[in-house]
Length: 382
Image (cartoon, rainbow, N blue to C red; front, side, top):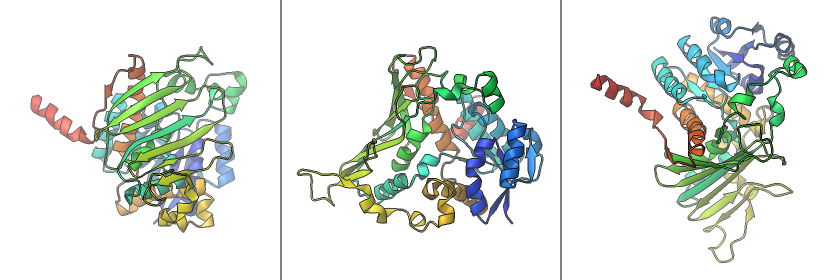
């Protein structure tokens, strides 16, 4: 029997094709505050039921919900959905406060339902290819990675729907994104790199900003740099810049290991490139090679992707993220990006705000995987 899915927020229709391609799920409901948009999209995509009230959709017979509403609603709506016995796929970021992240982990553990964060940059084929090569040991011992999200989006400060854009109302993004300091939106940059450092966790972070040069009326600085020290001692650097006047480069990554390195394109005809000491004849006069020369190392499902699956977006990545969510529900497999990953990656942004406001102070990362251990300690103390 197919899983019945409801989408909260018309923006979540980006997952629709993935669900439609799957034989194991069907989107039966759409929820959005914009009644005109709700009617338009439900008719366009043949979605039978529509709701303006999130709780009304939860009261229906859906099995799972995709939460693609403004980020300050992600945790409240996830908690409601879990409490109603629904599985949850949530857009990024997971939450907007540290308290929310603890509430979320505790709720997921108590519910027994699947929670997965929809960080689709992890599913970009090149990021999956590097992950597979890392797991095969081709880079040796990896010790440094970086990710950058350079996406000028000041125009998104206008209202959340078309009517509000016309009458000049302010978007939630003014407060929860560009009204924050530090790496407020870290998961696109961090997620793929953290998957390369499998079974490691972030121990501490430190963040500094460039100051205000382009839009001094906003709290967000032009550029924020955050360093993440892993429990192993290894290092990840992320740069978030949504203010500077410049071309976009939303998915730049690099990786360094003892036996090789990788860099994503910077633009102007640049390409994904790699150097491997064992493959390219030692370290005398090292030369880059195109990453496409190593596409045989793509995960099998990417090599076998059908045109229908590919049409879901991101070369099939948008299909595979949905399929992993469905498999976690139907097969009981671990969600690819579970609640602990979601909370740790999100917390980088929240802690970076505290760090940058305290001169780059090092902030310790809590271990969200130990929620039960912490609760047991509190019970013993009381």
